[in-house]
Length: 321
Image (tube, one colour):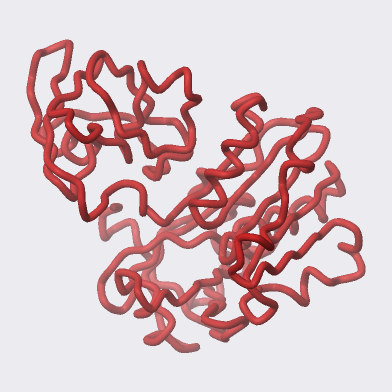
């Protein structure tokens, strides 16, 4: 979490419900000044009314620095951050926010880009669409998967004539038998890049279907943090091979957090197991891999300490640190 001095107040200039349980907030400088520039895929952190700090992707046009826009799904059974924001913030209020940061950038120079969004995962991809439409390259196509039209944010925007033929919207009604078949889309890499954001199940399915793609061509964004800790997690220990130091990792704490608490600095970025920055060599022990980065053949010798843990029955992992 960033320090308080990294936050600045932004004025909520608009707040509206744009789909079932989804709210859009437009944020601007209180004095009307231009905001810091951002690139498509960027997010910012907000301190919501109950004091929690949450990350939200920017869905607005990166070419417009007069305001930032975010779309937030109110999670009734979440940890309270989204509910605090959606229920407690109105137009005219001030919200502490950080400057934008991008862990989901449109890297590389592919022949085309495929966007796969599930539910509220459409938010960063909307900014990408704005940017590509402005630049006119490369070609792109969006596959947007939701339960129903009522739960689909930006539906009218995506029906604009300028996007004709570029957007496929699929509603499955929550029925797995009606799920969209992505295999024909992902069967052949063909020099393309994939950008996926949505429920972790969708991202894992896309990860499985792109195992034969170059790793640099598949990109994920995940703010859920659901994979990092689970109610049935148990404590274990990590041994650092270079110093033989032993660090206890309690239930509810990630390896990365435990390392930091013990004074060990490990490079990291997304901290959701999707970017690969914290990749560390696994010397010994069986890991419960919860990332979306490692290929199957890498899992015996690599680990993402931001989300992965010791596998059940394993008391110790040895890391090359």
